[in-house]
Amino acid sequence: MSSSQRFFKNETFEFLTLIALGSTAFRLAEVGEVLATVTAVKDGDHQSWFDAWMASGERAEKLAREAEAGGHLQTARDAYLRAAMYIGTAFFTILATTRAGDKIAVWRRHRANAEAAFRLWPTPVDKVAIPYEGTALEGYFFSGGEGRRPLLIVNNGSDGTVVELLTFGVDEAVRRGYHALTFDGPGQGQALYVQGLTFRHDWERVISPIVDWAVARTDVDASKIALSGWSQAGYWVPRAAAFEHRLAAAAVDPGVVKVNTSWLMHFPAELLQLYRAGQREEFDGALEAAIGDDTTLAAEGAKRMEPYGTESTFDLLSELEKWDLTDVAANIACPMLITDPEGEQFWPGQSRQLYDLLPGSKTLIRFTAAEGANWHCEPMVPVLRSHRVLDWLDATLGRC
Image 1 (tube, rainbow, N blue to C red):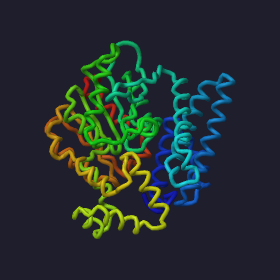
Image 2 (cartoon, rainbow, N blue to C red):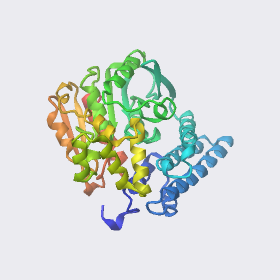
Image 3 (tube, one colour):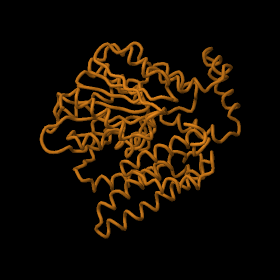
Image 4 (cartoon, helix red, strand yellow):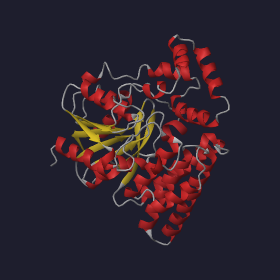
Protein backbone atom coordinates (compact mmCIF):
# COMPACT_ATOMS: atom_id res chain seq x y z
CA MET A 1 0.00 0.00 0.00
CA SER A 2 1.30 3.47 -0.78
CA SER A 3 1.91 5.94 2.03
CA SER A 4 -0.93 8.14 0.76
CA GLN A 5 -3.38 5.32 1.50
CA ARG A 6 -2.23 4.69 5.06
CA PHE A 7 -4.09 5.59 8.23
CA PHE A 8 -1.04 5.35 10.52
CA LYS A 9 2.73 5.23 10.35
CA ASN A 10 2.62 2.81 13.29
CA GLU A 11 2.58 -0.64 11.66
CA THR A 12 0.50 -2.28 14.38
CA PHE A 13 -2.16 0.43 14.31
CA GLU A 14 -2.28 0.27 10.52
CA PHE A 15 -2.66 -3.49 10.40
CA LEU A 16 -5.35 -3.61 13.09
CA THR A 17 -7.28 -0.86 11.29
CA LEU A 18 -7.22 -2.85 8.05
CA ILE A 19 -8.45 -5.94 9.89
CA ALA A 20 -11.33 -3.94 11.36
CA LEU A 21 -12.28 -2.50 7.99
CA GLY A 22 -12.13 -5.91 6.33
CA SER A 23 -14.30 -7.44 9.04
CA THR A 24 -17.21 -5.22 8.01
CA ALA A 25 -18.02 -7.90 5.40
CA PHE A 26 -18.99 -10.19 8.30
CA ARG A 27 -20.80 -7.48 10.32
CA LEU A 28 -18.05 -7.32 12.92
CA ALA A 29 -17.65 -3.60 12.25
CA GLU A 30 -19.12 -0.64 10.41
CA VAL A 31 -16.92 1.41 8.08
CA GLY A 32 -18.18 4.67 9.55
CA GLU A 33 -17.56 3.52 13.10
CA VAL A 34 -14.04 2.38 12.25
CA LEU A 35 -13.19 5.66 10.51
CA ALA A 36 -14.64 7.71 13.37
CA THR A 37 -12.64 5.65 15.85
CA VAL A 38 -9.27 5.93 14.15
CA THR A 39 -9.78 9.68 13.70
CA ALA A 40 -9.65 9.92 17.50
CA VAL A 41 -6.32 8.03 17.70
CA LYS A 42 -2.96 9.77 17.91
CA ASP A 43 -0.49 7.85 15.76
CA GLY A 44 1.66 5.58 17.91
CA ASP A 45 -0.11 6.55 21.15
CA HIS A 46 -1.31 3.32 22.77
CA GLN A 47 -3.50 5.09 25.33
CA SER A 48 -5.40 7.00 22.67
CA TRP A 49 -5.83 3.78 20.68
CA PHE A 50 -7.24 1.97 23.69
CA ASP A 51 -9.53 4.83 24.71
CA ALA A 52 -10.96 5.36 21.22
CA TRP A 53 -11.70 1.70 20.56
CA MET A 54 -13.11 1.13 24.05
CA ALA A 55 -15.46 4.08 23.56
CA SER A 56 -16.69 2.58 20.30
CA GLY A 57 -17.07 -0.81 21.91
CA GLU A 58 -19.05 0.60 24.80
CA ARG A 59 -21.40 2.41 22.42
CA ALA A 60 -22.00 -0.80 20.48
CA GLU A 61 -22.52 -2.73 23.69
CA LYS A 62 -25.12 -0.23 24.91
CA LEU A 63 -26.93 -0.42 21.57
CA ALA A 64 -26.90 -4.23 21.74
CA ARG A 65 -28.41 -4.35 25.21
CA GLU A 66 -31.11 -1.86 24.32
CA ALA A 67 -31.95 -3.74 21.11
CA GLU A 68 -32.14 -7.09 22.90
CA ALA A 69 -34.37 -5.65 25.63
CA GLY A 70 -36.66 -4.34 22.89
CA GLY A 71 -36.81 -7.70 21.14
CA HIS A 72 -34.72 -6.60 18.14
CA LEU A 73 -32.55 -9.69 18.24
CA GLN A 74 -30.74 -9.38 14.89
CA THR A 75 -29.81 -5.79 15.69
CA ALA A 76 -28.61 -6.94 19.11
CA ARG A 77 -26.56 -9.80 17.67
CA ASP A 78 -24.74 -7.57 15.20
CA ALA A 79 -24.13 -4.88 17.82
CA TYR A 80 -22.73 -7.44 20.27
CA LEU A 81 -20.39 -8.61 17.51
CA ARG A 82 -19.16 -5.08 16.91
CA ALA A 83 -18.75 -4.49 20.63
CA ALA A 84 -16.63 -7.65 20.90
CA MET A 85 -14.55 -6.65 17.88
CA TYR A 86 -13.94 -3.08 19.06
CA ILE A 87 -13.16 -4.00 22.66
CA GLY A 88 -10.85 -6.76 21.41
CA THR A 89 -9.09 -4.22 19.21
CA ALA A 90 -8.68 -1.88 22.18
CA PHE A 91 -7.38 -4.74 24.30
CA PHE A 92 -4.42 -5.23 21.99
CA THR A 93 -2.62 -2.20 23.49
CA ILE A 94 -3.84 -2.46 27.09
CA LEU A 95 -0.42 -3.36 28.53
CA ALA A 96 0.85 0.08 27.45
CA THR A 97 -1.98 2.05 29.06
CA THR A 98 -3.20 3.17 32.44
CA ARG A 99 -5.69 0.28 32.27
CA ALA A 100 -3.05 -2.47 32.28
CA GLY A 101 -4.27 -3.60 35.70
CA ASP A 102 -7.73 -4.18 34.22
CA LYS A 103 -6.42 -6.61 31.60
CA ILE A 104 -8.52 -9.59 32.67
CA ALA A 105 -11.67 -7.53 33.22
CA VAL A 106 -11.44 -5.96 29.76
CA TRP A 107 -10.77 -9.33 28.14
CA ARG A 108 -13.80 -10.79 29.93
CA ARG A 109 -15.92 -7.90 28.62
CA HIS A 110 -14.77 -8.64 25.08
CA ARG A 111 -15.60 -12.33 25.50
CA ALA A 112 -18.98 -11.63 27.13
CA ASN A 113 -20.04 -9.61 24.09
CA ALA A 114 -18.87 -12.38 21.76
CA GLU A 115 -20.87 -14.94 23.71
CA ALA A 116 -23.93 -12.71 23.69
CA ALA A 117 -23.71 -12.58 19.89
CA PHE A 118 -23.29 -16.37 19.67
CA ARG A 119 -26.33 -16.83 21.93
CA LEU A 120 -28.38 -14.98 19.30
CA TRP A 121 -26.77 -16.74 16.31
CA PRO A 122 -29.11 -17.95 13.53
CA THR A 123 -27.70 -21.48 13.90
CA PRO A 124 -26.88 -23.30 17.16
CA VAL A 125 -23.58 -22.35 18.82
CA ASP A 126 -22.53 -24.38 21.85
CA LYS A 127 -19.83 -23.42 24.31
CA VAL A 128 -17.73 -26.55 24.82
CA ALA A 129 -14.97 -27.83 27.09
CA ILE A 130 -12.41 -30.10 25.43
CA PRO A 131 -10.38 -32.36 27.78
CA TYR A 132 -6.70 -31.44 27.72
CA GLU A 133 -3.92 -32.58 30.07
CA GLY A 134 -5.93 -32.60 33.28
CA THR A 135 -7.90 -29.48 32.44
CA ALA A 136 -10.07 -28.38 29.49
CA LEU A 137 -9.77 -26.00 26.56
CA GLU A 138 -12.69 -23.65 25.99
CA GLY A 139 -14.23 -23.58 22.54
CA TYR A 140 -17.33 -22.86 20.49
CA PHE A 141 -19.05 -25.42 18.26
CA PHE A 142 -20.98 -23.82 15.39
CA SER A 143 -23.51 -26.26 13.98
CA GLY A 144 -23.87 -26.55 10.23
CA GLY A 145 -27.17 -28.41 10.58
CA GLU A 146 -28.56 -31.74 11.69
CA GLY A 147 -26.91 -35.08 11.02
CA ARG A 148 -23.27 -36.15 10.58
CA ARG A 149 -21.33 -33.43 8.80
CA PRO A 150 -17.72 -32.48 8.01
CA LEU A 151 -15.98 -30.44 10.68
CA LEU A 152 -13.64 -27.50 10.18
CA ILE A 153 -11.45 -26.81 13.22
CA VAL A 154 -10.23 -23.21 13.06
CA ASN A 155 -6.95 -22.47 14.85
CA ASN A 156 -6.32 -18.89 15.94
CA GLY A 157 -2.97 -17.13 15.68
CA SER A 158 -0.83 -15.66 18.43
CA ASP A 159 -3.15 -12.81 19.43
CA GLY A 160 -6.37 -12.95 17.40
CA THR A 161 -9.82 -12.79 19.00
CA VAL A 162 -12.58 -15.36 18.81
CA VAL A 163 -14.81 -13.10 16.70
CA GLU A 164 -12.06 -12.61 14.12
CA LEU A 165 -12.21 -16.36 13.48
CA LEU A 166 -15.63 -15.79 11.92
CA THR A 167 -13.79 -14.15 9.02
CA PHE A 168 -11.22 -16.96 8.82
CA GLY A 169 -13.57 -19.69 7.74
CA VAL A 170 -16.10 -20.22 10.53
CA ASP A 171 -18.92 -18.21 8.97
CA GLU A 172 -18.32 -19.49 5.44
CA ALA A 173 -18.01 -23.11 6.60
CA VAL A 174 -21.34 -23.01 8.43
CA ARG A 175 -23.00 -21.41 5.39
CA ARG A 176 -21.81 -24.41 3.35
CA GLY A 177 -23.11 -26.99 5.79
CA TYR A 178 -19.95 -27.75 7.74
CA HIS A 179 -19.77 -27.77 11.49
CA ALA A 180 -17.05 -25.38 12.70
CA LEU A 181 -15.08 -25.43 15.93
CA THR A 182 -12.96 -22.71 17.51
CA PHE A 183 -10.84 -23.22 20.61
CA ASP A 184 -8.50 -21.34 22.91
CA GLY A 185 -5.24 -23.25 22.83
CA PRO A 186 -2.36 -22.71 25.28
CA GLY A 187 -1.31 -19.05 25.10
CA GLN A 188 -4.66 -17.94 23.65
CA GLY A 189 -7.75 -16.35 25.20
CA GLN A 190 -9.20 -18.23 28.15
CA ALA A 191 -6.27 -20.65 28.25
CA LEU A 192 -3.82 -17.77 28.72
CA TYR A 193 -5.72 -15.15 30.72
CA VAL A 194 -7.64 -17.46 33.05
CA GLN A 195 -5.85 -20.83 33.05
CA GLY A 196 -2.27 -19.55 32.74
CA LEU A 197 -1.39 -21.94 29.91
CA THR A 198 1.32 -20.74 27.54
CA PHE A 199 2.40 -21.49 23.96
CA ARG A 200 4.03 -24.79 23.06
CA HIS A 201 5.85 -25.89 19.94
CA ASP A 202 4.48 -29.46 19.87
CA TRP A 203 0.99 -28.40 18.83
CA GLU A 204 -0.05 -31.97 18.01
CA ARG A 205 -0.43 -32.33 21.78
CA VAL A 206 -3.21 -29.73 21.49
CA ILE A 207 -4.87 -30.87 18.27
CA SER A 208 -4.97 -34.62 18.95
CA PRO A 209 -7.18 -34.21 22.08
CA ILE A 210 -9.44 -31.96 20.03
CA VAL A 211 -9.72 -34.60 17.30
CA ASP A 212 -10.39 -37.22 20.02
CA TRP A 213 -13.25 -35.06 21.26
CA ALA A 214 -14.59 -34.45 17.75
CA VAL A 215 -14.63 -38.07 16.56
CA ALA A 216 -16.59 -39.05 19.67
CA ARG A 217 -19.47 -36.82 18.56
CA THR A 218 -22.28 -38.48 16.64
CA ASP A 219 -22.82 -35.37 14.50
CA VAL A 220 -19.24 -35.22 13.14
CA ASP A 221 -18.12 -37.19 10.10
CA ALA A 222 -14.82 -38.50 11.44
CA SER A 223 -13.51 -39.08 7.91
CA LYS A 224 -13.89 -35.41 7.03
CA ILE A 225 -12.22 -33.40 9.77
CA ALA A 226 -10.16 -30.46 8.47
CA LEU A 227 -7.89 -28.04 10.32
CA SER A 228 -7.20 -24.46 9.25
CA GLY A 229 -5.19 -21.70 10.87
CA TRP A 230 -4.04 -18.16 10.34
CA SER A 231 -1.00 -16.09 11.26
CA GLN A 232 1.24 -18.03 13.69
CA ALA A 233 -1.05 -21.02 13.24
CA GLY A 234 0.70 -21.24 9.88
CA TYR A 235 3.29 -23.12 11.94
CA TRP A 236 0.97 -24.88 14.43
CA VAL A 237 -1.38 -26.43 11.86
CA PRO A 238 1.28 -28.20 9.75
CA ARG A 239 3.16 -29.17 12.91
CA ALA A 240 0.00 -30.87 14.19
CA ALA A 241 -0.73 -32.43 10.78
CA ALA A 242 2.72 -34.01 10.74
CA PHE A 243 1.74 -36.15 13.75
CA GLU A 244 -2.08 -36.22 13.77
CA HIS A 245 -3.01 -38.31 10.73
CA ARG A 246 -6.77 -38.37 11.27
CA LEU A 247 -7.02 -34.96 9.57
CA ALA A 248 -8.52 -35.16 6.09
CA ALA A 249 -7.19 -31.75 5.03
CA ALA A 250 -5.34 -28.72 6.37
CA ALA A 251 -5.07 -25.08 5.31
CA VAL A 252 -2.80 -22.27 6.52
CA ASP A 253 -2.65 -18.52 5.93
CA PRO A 254 0.29 -18.03 5.44
CA GLY A 255 2.78 -20.90 5.62
CA VAL A 256 5.37 -20.66 8.41
CA VAL A 257 8.46 -22.88 8.55
CA LYS A 258 10.58 -21.06 11.14
CA VAL A 259 8.67 -18.91 13.61
CA ASN A 260 11.77 -17.21 15.01
CA THR A 261 12.49 -15.26 11.82
CA SER A 262 9.66 -12.85 12.66
CA TRP A 263 11.65 -11.98 15.79
CA LEU A 264 15.24 -12.16 14.57
CA MET A 265 14.67 -9.81 11.63
CA HIS A 266 14.17 -6.92 14.06
CA PHE A 267 17.44 -7.27 16.00
CA PRO A 268 20.67 -5.50 14.99
CA ALA A 269 23.76 -7.56 14.26
CA GLU A 270 25.36 -6.71 17.61
CA LEU A 271 22.46 -8.20 19.56
CA LEU A 272 22.27 -11.25 17.34
CA GLN A 273 25.95 -11.87 17.96
CA LEU A 274 25.33 -11.92 21.73
CA TYR A 275 22.40 -14.27 21.29
CA ARG A 276 24.29 -16.71 19.09
CA ALA A 277 27.17 -16.68 21.55
CA GLY A 278 24.77 -17.80 24.28
CA GLN A 279 25.31 -14.70 26.40
CA ARG A 280 21.90 -14.53 28.04
CA GLU A 281 22.43 -11.78 30.61
CA GLU A 282 24.40 -9.62 28.21
CA PHE A 283 21.78 -10.03 25.48
CA ASP A 284 18.79 -9.22 27.70
CA GLY A 285 20.64 -6.31 29.29
CA ALA A 286 21.68 -4.84 25.94
CA LEU A 287 18.12 -5.19 24.62
CA GLU A 288 16.68 -3.45 27.68
CA ALA A 289 19.18 -0.61 27.26
CA ALA A 290 18.36 -0.32 23.55
CA ILE A 291 14.64 -0.02 24.29
CA GLY A 292 15.32 2.52 27.01
CA ASP A 293 12.37 4.88 27.42
CA ASP A 294 10.70 3.87 24.15
CA THR A 295 7.29 2.91 25.54
CA THR A 296 6.06 1.78 22.14
CA LEU A 297 8.78 -0.85 21.76
CA ALA A 298 8.48 -1.91 25.38
CA ALA A 299 4.71 -2.34 25.14
CA GLU A 300 4.77 -4.23 21.87
CA GLY A 301 7.54 -6.48 23.18
CA ALA A 302 5.56 -7.23 26.34
CA LYS A 303 2.47 -8.04 24.28
CA ARG A 304 4.36 -10.44 22.03
CA MET A 305 6.17 -12.16 24.90
CA GLU A 306 3.18 -12.56 27.23
CA PRO A 307 1.80 -15.82 25.76
CA TYR A 308 5.22 -17.47 25.90
CA GLY A 309 5.32 -17.14 29.68
CA THR A 310 8.77 -15.54 29.94
CA GLU A 311 10.19 -12.09 30.52
CA SER A 312 13.54 -12.98 28.99
CA THR A 313 13.79 -12.39 25.26
CA PHE A 314 16.87 -14.61 25.17
CA ASP A 315 14.86 -17.49 26.66
CA LEU A 316 12.03 -16.86 24.21
CA LEU A 317 14.39 -16.95 21.21
CA SER A 318 15.98 -20.12 22.57
CA GLU A 319 12.54 -21.73 22.85
CA LEU A 320 11.71 -20.71 19.29
CA GLU A 321 14.68 -22.67 17.97
CA LYS A 322 12.37 -25.70 18.35
CA TRP A 323 9.60 -24.05 16.32
CA ASP A 324 10.86 -25.30 12.97
CA LEU A 325 9.05 -27.50 10.44
CA THR A 326 12.10 -28.31 8.33
CA ASP A 327 12.52 -31.84 9.68
CA VAL A 328 8.85 -32.74 10.24
CA ALA A 329 6.96 -31.37 7.20
CA ALA A 330 7.73 -34.54 5.24
CA ASN A 331 5.47 -36.44 7.67
CA ILE A 332 2.34 -34.51 6.60
CA ALA A 333 0.06 -36.97 4.83
CA CYS A 334 -3.14 -34.97 4.27
CA PRO A 335 -3.71 -32.50 1.41
CA MET A 336 -2.65 -28.98 2.37
CA LEU A 337 -3.54 -25.52 1.14
CA ILE A 338 -1.08 -22.66 1.73
CA THR A 339 -1.82 -19.01 1.00
CA ASP A 340 0.97 -16.76 -0.24
CA PRO A 341 0.07 -13.08 0.22
CA GLU A 342 2.10 -10.44 -1.58
CA GLY A 343 3.91 -8.21 0.89
CA GLU A 344 3.84 -10.75 3.74
CA GLN A 345 5.59 -8.82 6.49
CA PHE A 346 6.19 -11.43 9.21
CA TRP A 347 7.28 -14.59 7.38
CA PRO A 348 8.12 -13.49 3.83
CA GLY A 349 8.89 -16.34 1.46
CA GLN A 350 7.97 -19.06 3.92
CA SER A 351 4.70 -20.06 2.24
CA ARG A 352 6.73 -21.22 -0.75
CA GLN A 353 9.30 -22.85 1.55
CA LEU A 354 6.59 -24.86 3.29
CA TYR A 355 5.03 -25.81 -0.04
CA ASP A 356 8.38 -27.12 -1.27
CA LEU A 357 8.84 -29.22 1.88
CA LEU A 358 5.48 -31.00 1.56
CA PRO A 359 5.66 -34.49 0.06
CA GLY A 360 2.05 -35.05 -0.97
CA SER A 361 -1.02 -33.25 -2.30
CA LYS A 362 -0.49 -29.49 -1.94
CA THR A 363 -1.85 -26.22 -3.27
CA LEU A 364 -0.32 -22.73 -3.13
CA ILE A 365 -2.70 -19.81 -3.65
CA ARG A 366 -1.20 -16.41 -4.36
CA PHE A 367 -2.96 -13.26 -3.11
CA THR A 368 -1.88 -10.00 -4.73
CA ALA A 369 -1.92 -6.25 -4.24
CA ALA A 370 -3.71 -5.88 -7.58
CA GLU A 371 -6.78 -7.53 -6.04
CA GLY A 372 -6.41 -5.68 -2.73
CA ALA A 373 -5.29 -8.91 -1.07
CA ASN A 374 -1.73 -8.11 -0.02
CA TRP A 375 -0.22 -8.10 3.46
CA HIS A 376 -0.23 -10.69 6.19
CA CYS A 377 -3.48 -12.70 6.17
CA GLU A 378 -5.06 -10.48 3.49
CA PRO A 379 -6.89 -8.23 6.00
CA MET A 380 -9.02 -6.36 3.46
CA VAL A 381 -10.46 -9.34 1.54
CA PRO A 382 -11.82 -11.82 4.11
CA VAL A 383 -14.67 -12.94 1.85
CA LEU A 384 -12.35 -13.61 -1.10
CA ARG A 385 -10.01 -15.50 1.22
CA SER A 386 -12.84 -17.54 2.77
CA HIS A 387 -14.24 -18.43 -0.64
CA ARG A 388 -10.89 -19.66 -1.96
CA VAL A 389 -10.14 -21.71 1.13
CA LEU A 390 -13.62 -23.26 1.36
CA ASP A 391 -13.78 -23.90 -2.40
CA TRP A 392 -10.54 -25.85 -2.06
CA LEU A 393 -11.87 -27.70 0.97
CA ASP A 394 -15.12 -28.58 -0.81
CA ALA A 395 -13.14 -30.04 -3.70
CA THR A 396 -10.67 -31.84 -1.43
CA LEU A 397 -13.40 -33.49 0.64
CA GLY A 398 -15.48 -34.32 -2.42
CA ARG A 399 -18.32 -31.96 -1.60
CA CYS A 400 -18.59 -30.32 -5.03
